[in-house]
Structures are given as structure tokens and as C-alpha cells.
Length: 419
Image (cartoon, rainbow, N blue to C red; front, side):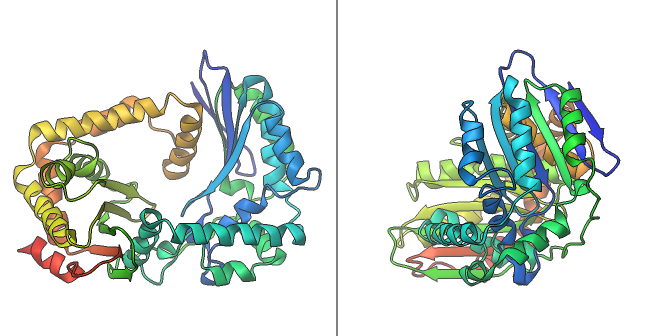
């Protein structure tokens, strides 16, 4: 059963007890991520996530790790464009310890200048590693091509020159702006007791004052092209179209469409481009959503000699879906989505994250039956209509990395889609 409590200062607490589970996941999700940064702050939300584990007023970095790992637990964090999360997975009896440690690192970081320098080098290594991982960095470049010169288009890691310049005052300033109780969600699932967690949260967070929501730059899809030539074994190709935001009526239609096009081995793009033509090893499609925009993305890796054929076939399949997407394909995609959702929620960590994300978006957590009904309501006709509108929109972006050779330009792909 899901239970929620909101403290007077705005901290939202949500839990789900999962009978029969010995473990639990507990964490703090902060509604501040990459898109909440000003241009000069690009990368600081991620830097702050790293620094949370580097010492508090009562614990050193080693003591933070030991506190959780001494009881066999796991602690981690991540930064996205719209949220930053700090969470731990432990046995049920250690939930109070995990919440105490998570609260400590979120509320009491000391930002030791020596640790800042150490972590600065770690993050610069992370940036370097991303640049050496083509099927990772290509999505950052695609995001930038879709939303140039905007918060939504900037990389989460930030550019190296920004990371080089951040200091203690920058980190503390971002915390003061965004890390108020009214911008946090405490989410826990598994072997948890809601009342006990609320009581502990009141003691840790109850005295804090809200900071208010800071306005963010709205996302404006512009759609452009980025090509990075490098001597690699493969050309990495990523094509995106503007998709629906979280609350848009087309959200589930876009997700069913993306799943049918490239969500598995039976999908159109996988069958046509890999299985029938052997043009690639990896190809997939996905639909991602944000507060005020979204992206439907197709990715593939292929050789310099085959990139032209792959691009052409991909566009042709996108066009064809508007005319002959079958009932069987849509039914299969719906089944994949529902099964994936239910399988994922066998994990306490997945449930805690889902609750936090849904609470931040809708102010509630839609039931699984409600979500399944919305997926089932997506008809073949709706998917065909969506495919046609997507192809005709011209609202696309392209990123290419590697020996790009004579890969078609974005305008050529748009023209082929529209023809």
C-alpha cells in the first residue's frame, strides 16, 4: 500500500510496504537537475551529487561508505535533467540507518576544498570517459542539436572548463537555491514502516524553511544537426523527433509507437535493418518525456559504407508506419510495455524511484491498473496517425559521430520523410 505525508514545510514523504521483501530502498529525490542550472552553472548539479559523498559535519567520505556497507547495503546517487537522487538499499532493519545517512549527506555537506579538488579530477575523468564512449556521448550531442543554447540542451556533466572553475561557494549557492524541503521527495519501498519514516523525517527535515520553486527556461525545440568526424570503427547515428511531454495526451501513443518501431528484436527497425539487411548490430527506438517537451529517438551504429543505406531505410520505415502499422504490432508493443513495467516493479528500488518521479509530475502515483488501461487504450489507428504526424512535422534533430563519410544531411532526411 502506498502512503503519503506532507510536512508543514513542504517535504513530501511517500512509502510503499512490500510484504515478503527483506530489503528496502530509501532515498531523497530533489526536483533540481541539469535544466535548473544557469549557463555559468552548467554541470554543478552533477558536481554537487558527487560532493554529497565526500564528507559531512559528522562523517568523513570513508565513514559514509562504511556506515552503509558495514550492514551489507548499497548507496548511490544520480543526476538527470530534472532531478537529483540520493538513495540506499539495505535490509529492512537498517532503514533508519540508511535514512539517517542519506539525510546527513543531503543536509550537511561540508564541501572540503581538498575533496572538491579530488572530485573535480574524478569528474573530468568521467567527462573524458564519456567522450571515449560514442554510444553515450552521441545522446548528449543529440540533445544539444534538438535544444541548442538552452538549459534543456546542455550536458549534465557540464563542459570541462566549467567544472575546472567551480568552487565551494558555487556548490553552497546551488544548495541554498534548490535544496529546500519543498523541493524534495523522500521515497521508500520494500520492508518499510511509513509512520517510523515520517517521524524520523520530521526530526531531520522539519526545521527547514522552504525555498520556493525556481522558474526554469522553457524547452524550445529547434532541431539542428551535429556531425563529429573521428576515426572509429563505426558511425554512430542518432535521429530524434520532438515528442510529447509527461502530461500530453499523446504520451502513451508515442511510447507504443517507439516500442513497435524499435523496442525489441521483433520491432520494425530491428527486423528490417539488422535481420533482413545486416546493416547494423544495434538499433533501437525510445520515447522519453520531460515536464514540457519530449523526444522520440532512434539510434544505430553501422559502418561508413552502410550509413547511407541505414539512414534511408530508417526514414522509409518511419514513413511506412503511418500506412501499414498492424494491429499485431501495436498489440505486441502494448504487451511489452505492460510487462516491462510490471517486471521492473518487482524491485524496491524501481518502486521508490517510480513513486518519486510520479509524485513530482502529477502530485500522485497512478495505479498500475490505471496505467495499463491507458496503454491498452492506444489503438492501431492512433499509432498510425501519430506516425504520420511525426513524419510530416519536420521537427527533427540529428547527431552523427565517427567516419561519417557521405551520411545524408538532416535536410535530406526531412525531405525524404515529407515526400
